[in-house]
Each structure stands twice: as C-alpha cells, then as structure tokens.
Image (cartoon, rainbow, N blue to C red; front, side):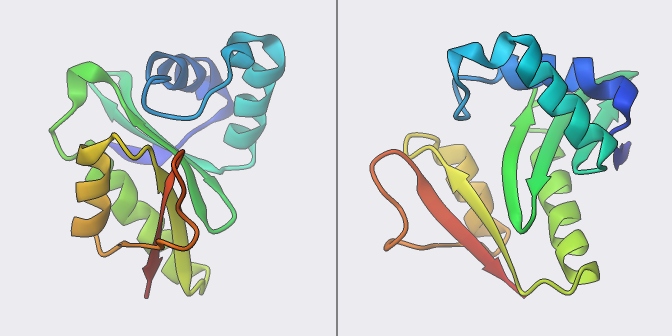
Length: 140
C-alpha cells in the first residue's frame, strides 16, 4: 500500500535508509539522533512516501522540493515494482503541484536505478552529472 509517511513511521524509515546506505549518499553519522530527527521532520512535513507490505515499510521516498532526494527499497522487496510505484507517485505529485520537472540522482554504479529512471522517462543531464552522481530530470 502506497501512502504518505506519518511521524510514527520515522524510526522504520530511518532504519530502511540506513540499511540501504550502500546505494544512497549517507554520512556515517546518519545513525545519530540528529538524523533521526531529520527523518521525523520530513515525515511530519509529509515529504516522505512509503510502500507498505505485510505491515512493514518495504520502500520509501524522501522528496525535497522538486527532487527525489532518497529512494530506497528493502533487499527483501526489490524487483517487485516498489521503486516504480514510488517514482510514479513523485510524478503525480509533481503534476499536482504544477511543477515542470523532477530531479533524481543515482550512483554511477547503480545500473538498476539508472535503468528504472530512464524507463520512467527521466533523462540524464550530462552537464550536471559528475563522477560521484549521475543527475536525471523528468519533464512533463
């Protein structure tokens, strides 16, 4: 089930982000209380979307303005369409907000995410991309 995260989901969202740290840009300090509070604040501001499966958060997406800031899916739930569901929601949200673009970044070595972004209509901005992150934009 796709839904906006609640404040009570913050601990589970934080844990999922930490578990997926090999795929996203997290500092080693992300485990600290300051970052737990950061996740909680994003949940309270309704900037986090989650997909729930069998009572647990299987995937999460943190939005910051026009950017998909974090997009993660638990190892046990990958290749089930959860990331695609979250990206589809980000695109619907952008249309509802009357935004013309969405931005997403991907680790250059994370081919599955880059393929998914391309499949979902995102195009790489080679000017903005660097050795650390490939930058993608979706335009409506």
